[in-house]
Length: 187
Ligand code: NI
Image 1 (tube, rainbow, N blue to C red):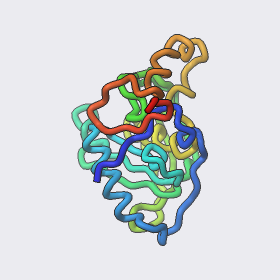
Image 2: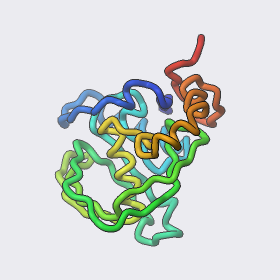
Image 3: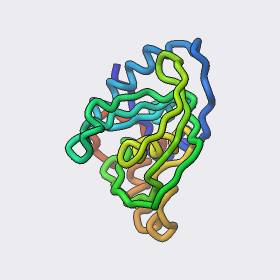
């Protein structure tokens, strides 16, 4: 089932999400629905707060970037209760998008290397290192479960310049080709 994606301005996107255990009701169905929702919207990542659930769960499918980095072919993972343990390297910039911000792309600086511990969809524990674009997508989705969105990582000046654009996203004055829930849409 395709779920509506929560637009910028909804408090759930500003809330630090909570850990879950393997008995979380409907977890398997939620994960399936989130994959379906993400692929329908042509996303490479989706976090539970973006479908209105304030829990520490996100997924990444970086395979669309396999032309830029062959090791991303088949890179498809679910992250539950993630903790980024370490980030290092030289800051690099990338033009990011986010399904909660239709029609907006922003240059965001992040560190290129991460070490993260998490559980997969079978609640098997992992501790892995990622770099480059896979790390980038994981950092973006991890931000979502921490209550941080893309525009929190741009300068206040830049944020002022796109103020109207952000207001339009919250009001629903945008036309994404996937269903969304807008916090300030007038009925
Ligand atoms: Ni996002």
